[in-house]
Image (cartoon, rainbow, N blue to C red; front, side, top):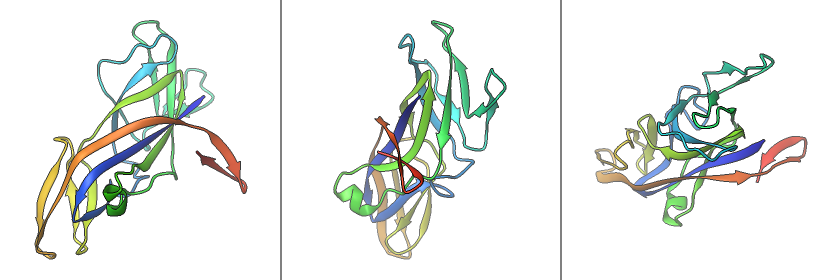
Length: 176
């Protein structure tokens, strides 16, 4: 098993706390990405949609995963399980330092997530406290904050997957 960390970054203008609506562990937020077969290296042509609230049984019937998919090239089956509790909103400070924020951990068994696609279902807070529903499917967002009397925006959205290791600290699993 390999653990993949999905991290996001963006340039935030007069906004902070960019995250999926309902928080980083929102069970109904849709994650769209392609998958790579860890056996033959084939990358799926279409994006896959995965949600915390949707699970499917593994072929063995002894457990479940959020995604079970067969490689179209080699026929190997793999799965991905989402691990909650690790996500943090992207803050204005992180944006100004061009840092990434942790969003979700994926436990890949035979499949590796790749090429994350931003969609709708995001939210961010203006510096004046207004909450904005954000659609990032076009790669940017622009609006005007009436309360703060200033423009707000999100540009240069980026996401990456990186391999992390699971360690136990103080009786709790952490991913570094």
